[in-house]
Length: 237
Image: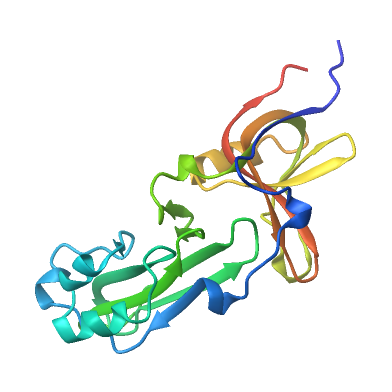
């Protein structure tokens, strides 16, 4: 028996507009770096760069900054809409932490860490004022800004289609893996390395994928539809 590709989309849109009506905010509206950050030395103990501190009120600021510094930061932020995200770690003086802003819905901020090669152990502190309706991730792992991510609007999908694990695109605007069901092709974003390796082995075969769908604005590719994969299984042909 031959099974046709199919996709099942369940929508949970609470108090939101459909995607065609969504506007995108500029980067300055979403994230702003704080300069000359000075943190209490004891706060670096057991700090890990992949575990940033989320400061959601003035009292939390007081635990990490001097009274004067805390007051200066508090003057720049509306805690109803923003939070301070503080990355603390100890490492090479050449360590770098960068980020990119993807104008998806919701807006996604992806942080990337580059480990330095010098052996001069130093303390690093980088702080940002970030809008709490944004999605924040570090090396592919989501960091909640406004409570439980499960409370946000989302589109959950289940797709049965053919895997292409050899995708290339101009400017690298691709996750490298897609699934096609009929005339519909979506990219697959697979955070777990073992899961990605397993999916890539199924190149050219039918697979059932489950996850959440989002639209992302690109440069060379104006509109990208990406499924963040939660689970998959080989289809029974």
